[in-house]
Amino acid sequence: MLKLLSGVLGLLMLANAHLACAALSIEIIGAGENQIPVSLVPFGGDQTLGLAINEVVSGDLQRSGLFRLVDATGKSPHEPAEVKYTDWQLRGAVALSIGTVGTQANGRIEARFRLMDVVKQVELVGQAVSANDGQVRAVGHRIADLIYEKLTGNQGVFSTRIAYVNRQGKMFSLLVADSDGYNEQIVLKQNEPIMSPSWSPDGSHLAYVSFETGHAAVVVQSLYTNQRKVVADFRGSNSAPAWSPDGRQMAVVLTRDGSSQIYLMRPDGSDVRRISFSGGIDTEPNFSPDGQSLLFTSDRGGSAQIYRMPVEGGAAQRMTFEAGTSYSPRHSPDGKSFVFTHLTGGRFFISLQDFQTGQMETLTEGGWEKKPSYAPNGKLILFASEARGRGILATVSSDGRVKQHMFTQSGDAREPVWGPHL
Amino acid sequence: MKKLVISIVLLNLLAACASQKPQETTAAPAPAPKAVEASTAPVEAAQVDPLNDPKSILAGRSVFYPFDVSAVQDADKPLVQAHAKYLSENAARTVRLEGNCDERGSNEYNLGLGQRRADGVQKMLVLGGAKTAQLNSISYGEEKPRASGHEEASWSQNRRTDLNYAK
Image (cartoon, rainbow over the protein chains, first blue to last red):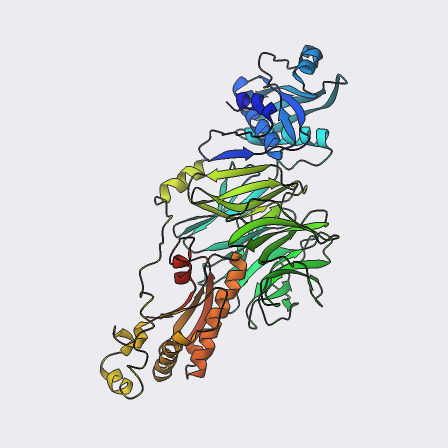
């Protein structure tokens, strides 16, 4: 079904793809300016696996907004020798993905994938991609990454993971899922709130806020062993954990000395030292990619705005001046801009501001849109939104052109954060 | 996928609705601020704990706020002062002050705001004679809304500090 829809993508303005799956449904709205026309031929060999991989690759490439999928119906080359380039030139494709897939005796899925340049009539990349039994989506994401990297020059993020919180009544779950929202796994489930998940830079741990001790405390949990450690549990509230880029420090917000202030500590909770000194609420610290400064939210000027300060402490500089209030800043991976939540006129927007020009750009239409975070390649932004009365996950391309909504099966999805490359 | 199915089985209720247990109505704190005061309290305290008297001002357990404000409003000061007096006369009682916010703002900002609300009530209780050891202020931010709508009728319910006495 997805492939049929993809064929109509030439209409350009609106592409709606509903991926039939128990976990969630996805809607894609809008299209990039210069989409690369690429055709994906379902892999030969095990056709069921071939179609499953094709669906994952198609979904990934469409979601990026950078590709237009050219209908492959009626042609099914699987080896370079079987490719008639004129066929694909006539259909308007510049690149063609072909290959075969099968299951080995040990149960591993192995795909042999090639990307052909239809214009130059050469192979752009060829690679064997394998994964454990049942991990067909991982194979698809890896192939989508290879296509994306070869055709755009940027690193793909389809194989990365996201974390988010799902709230259903009084039950809270901390979940980790593939970047497209599928393949979700429960990290923690409890009937007390969970907030603010934050990935360690190597993707091995999540820090988050849990109310399991009766108030907000910061917990660090290994995603490999599930071992958990409460690392900040002082009087009042302990929250907003953020990792330094080298993983050696964590910024947290504590109220142990009065109002919410920013502290640094080691990720094991030792060596706690205060770095912000305002009478107001200082919260949501986020390290710059070079580890030298922090963006954070503060109401020290009378309303919540974004500020920046050196990591070692010192004078803070106000960054946002637009009407309304601003929250939840996060640096772009290249450090040149930041995204944040902008509340104005009773609506929340996802906005982006360039450090050099100070100019703000609003990326979304507005509504209940909160907590933006960049994909590690800086090309997509993940955030919490609301549709049909429920909290959902959404992405927008960093140029604001392509938006996607991901509906989980039930409950309210919130607090999403994009994980690093593994 | 398997885990997802399990989660659906366990989480039977789609709760787009408020899930807090019913507590006092909003109107409770406001009326009859000077009805029960110093002269009667010691006499009654011997027989009936005024905390359990539904007619007492102490039956009010919530303080409400305007948007993005953490100072106790004039309308609620008699309530907080009555609780301060009660705590000063009942040293064994402890109370948890739970700050809450509406959903506008980020949830981390609101966690800070809720903490400031609870701390403000704590400060007023201490000034009124309660001991710090009787008090524990925490914040739920916007995480435990009493009402779930996206409008002022719900928000005004959610901007509050609850005085939650230990049993």
